[in-house]
Length: 188
Image (tube, rainbow, N blue to C red):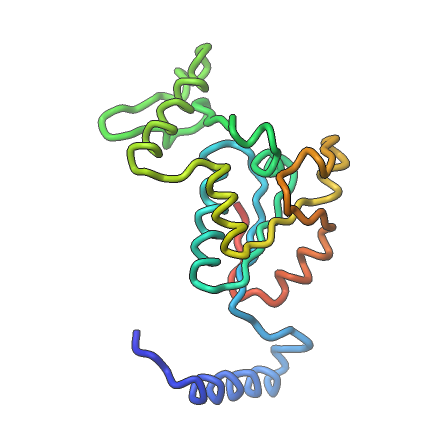
């Protein structure tokens, strides 16, 4: 994609906004910024990589990024638990690699979660993908805001001191205020 002159881009953006307002399609909607807002709601290892990789990449691209960890997603930023996240083999139809396919029914056998977790850790290590704690550090170094849902913390009995350093404990309204100006919003 060719680089567009910033003045031309600003002119086009303003004309689009004016046209939307004239059509009654935009009423008090804040302008979008070079910002990404991610909700992370699941605490398994495979679901932890997505928000952290997207967040760290956005930060490296000089975007404003916030990841809002809620419910089981809080395990990703839990000091003790984030080193031991697991991958569930049961009910995961995509649990395959090459010719190796793990039927869902096999996931019910004792030890299958540990095996699936070990397999994924091996795949990640082979490809030199950072661990979850390392990705959290990378995110913070890139300026990614790490937000913890205060209500979820209360419901799940998690205290601020249980979480990694640098976490902001906020309500849904704070996250929504941030997300309302985001060009990209994601739910994981």
